[in-house]
Length: 437
Image 1: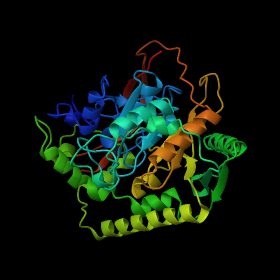
Image 2 (image 1 turned 120 degrees about the vertical axis):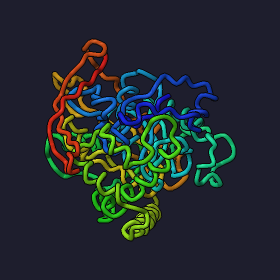
Image 3 (image 1 turned 30 degrees about the vertical axis):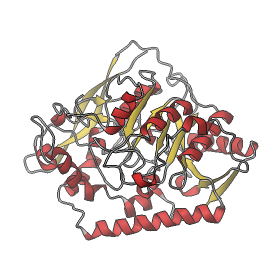
Image 4 (image 1 turned 90 degrees about the vertical axis):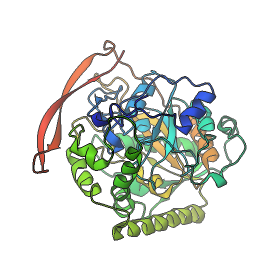
């Protein structure tokens, strides 16, 4: 099937073989129904692209579905399929899971083969599933975990026997469960976009404590999403080289390099992405700043490991997004906390934990998700904790839509394109999206 990254310039890109995880799923009996829209080239979390337009959130048709795998999140929430897959460089699996009332897991770096994906960052890219229940997530993770590929970095650390996460989630929850609440990932604002997240987090914390679990506040200036992003994010240094390597072997009439892709004009760059693209086109892993970021990543890993040891924790918890998922037309998907797992490579499960207050236009409210992060290779325990959360506070509800199938909406969204002098020029473009009943 065409593998486009949502980019019009890659609309004719047809890989010659299945990715390792796709082969594993098909061998296990999965039926591949199709591909979905995503944020173009996985570079933001709004799920808008030159090929697919703007994907809408099925719970609130004025909001984005998170991203970059927002098409998958919207599709699974709307029951177009049982499960979906996606890649995650910073938030891309967990953001749509949180925004659409779903479960997802970003496993330990190297645990699941990344062969076949359009890359962004070799340091931060990961592959994982999205599902409506923890049971469905466990089934698909068990299959994906056994996908074999030479690309798999840490294959020596993998259990050679079959991973059965379905059996893991059916075990009794650990006694004296200890979870650390990352205070630096909470927003103290009382705005209508933030307070629903705080209210939902307070509710799940109370439920955990009522079921004999411990929630320990973790106060650390080092655990701040903005600080970690600034200090550790490697994307702009690795992106050009990664995409160039990928496109160099692409078949058909498609760009053979990142420079050629963006010179084609068959792409979409929103304002916030333009500086990233300009920088990525000239940045390199040979840059001294890149080496500094790798060193800080190792420091970040040691910090998290020390917190686990000091507080005797089973996992860290925090909202995936400290505010509600943004409306379309917003410049970015602000407030997300996925960077910690992305740079440390530690596994993390996202679970639905509630909704904002409903109203006439949003009958259920807007979904809110929580991340559960653990040490390396702790996928089974994290899935077990997620199953515990699902049991004590079942939060997932299907979206309620009373519009016709493929009802079309238009929206004005500010985008930019380079002019002849390669300077961004902002102007509005109307995009079409659709939803279902």
